[in-house]
Image (cartoon, rainbow, N blue to C red; front, top):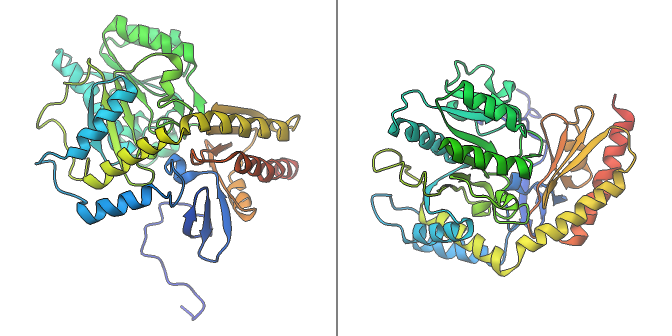
Length: 399
């Protein structure tokens, strides 16, 4: 190795990273270690609900760090009670289990589905899942996930999953007839990694009726689309229904790792002492982050902001891309927006970063925008003013 060759990193190469390193942030803006500024249209992949350096969140977390970061679930954690109360109030559900991530929340949901079946004498419970789904990268959650690239190299997959197309209630009903051991229907209210694909509102209502008629669980993964991202606390609320099980994570802690499974009466008592647990889950720091996030969201009207600024951003993108060949569809709700192109568009991530905008590309050809819920109208316009010309130039030069 010569003097100009960088040392080999000891970090595993599990990510295809862009050539930039973020140093610090403020609001919806971040700066890299070279001092260059970027408008953050990704928010840590729908995590940084309150943006960066929020003037109320930061001192609250500093206060909590000075008091208590972690104890153990051997003891009562009063902040767990506060956050659980708030989540149940906002959702209309009744019990919460706390963990550390969306993957863990989805794992807990799958355990609930299986034990729900076993408690009713079903020794081989199955879970109905959907094409385009992404529920995580553990062995169980990647088995529930639809992406074959994520499966590759990790077989054999966990059995017990039946997969059908999204928004096809007839396929759901046929699967339930063919697989009487199904104990739960599990889906993202809006698929995130699968390409920002919403479950249609009437389809969600139909699923609720079907689950009730079969006495099985409706489990709605709101890890990415929950916590106000669509303009309601939870995306399922647009359909005026309630799930039996709802995994949450990402935006709940505004950047502090957190996960939760919120359950209604049908599922709330399935897990009993010894059935499940977590060392770090529900620690005081994460709970304080969750309580402060929800409080600030309420007091600052961030659900209304997600609706208003999200609509403005969507309109600006539609206007900027009107009539452009290669743009298939612009979809999503609130501040969760996907722009589907007719070709692979991974290079747009680096091109956007070079232009001062952070985005992601998911499902190979869908540009995903999930900015902080504090995004201003001027910042929404700036996202569109940067991104639309990049998309046009990309489509004009890439076969």
